[in-house]
Length: 363
Image 1: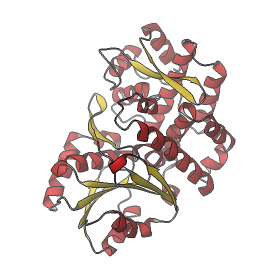
Image 2 (image 1 turned 30 degrees about the horizontal axis):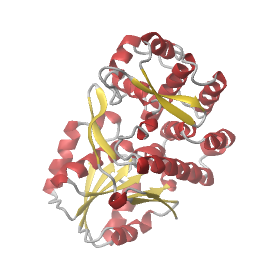
Image 3 (image 1 turned 135 degrees about the vertical axis):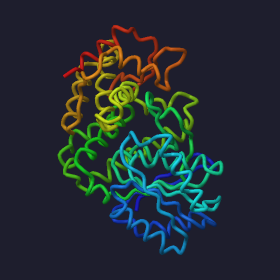
Image 4 (image 1 turned 90 degrees about the vertical axis):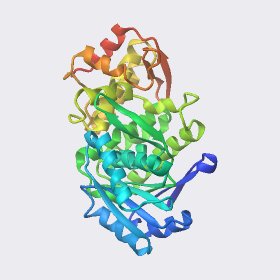
């Protein structure tokens, strides 16, 4: 079992990465969490009878009380209504300060359960057990929790660090192909923003990754978590601007999700399009070379991800982008690449360039 430490002082926590390890989780958590008495087990409805059952039985064997709460999958369910239902169920199950929230599923479950943990009784301890590639490499690490408003993604939430992240890559074996590919967009992102050598690895081993080789999957999960942990450890709450680089492609991508009512694209698919648009904007501003833009686009397409979008008028998409959390005083801030492995924040982009970047990826 591999272990990565997210270094945040008293809020530091481990990320465990292994294969076929779920049966060992309860024992490790008992050692990690002193005095816990109950697990509030929040699980994606699609896996509650399979992976979820394995985890629940593992927790029951620890001789602790276990309450299972099932939530629907899909970005549209990361809502105020579902958060309220979770609060109500936690109250019914008599959750108290010795309870531990255990989220198992993808990013929607992790974000929703994490915000419930952050807000119930002003904060309960929280464990992430991601079962999708996107959640493993991105949303389960870093402490961002929250829900969507109808017109803006992740607008309501809290920074609430987990006490541990438990990643078992064997859970990816049954993940639908579209969801697996969606997660690869966030993996590619790390190569573009932080590590050209990692980007080279993804290009070289794309076929093995798509075949879900456990060796290659463990490597890309571990390296993605290492890179994110490094950034989060230096800028936990986005106060220095460093953590903002993790939002590469997200200003465009979140707007695409919102304008299509969170139902047309999976998150990673929208981010893939958003990264392509951001790269195109950087190209128009002469920040990075066409060769890098072509490499990024080719790798995303090799992973079966979309790179074009023309379903919403440009004006509507730009209007949705104005609700992005990186917007300041009505001015959009973009994370744009300057070379493979490096990005920077760019402000005051001309509307014509933003429009051109969007229209340049319409196919």
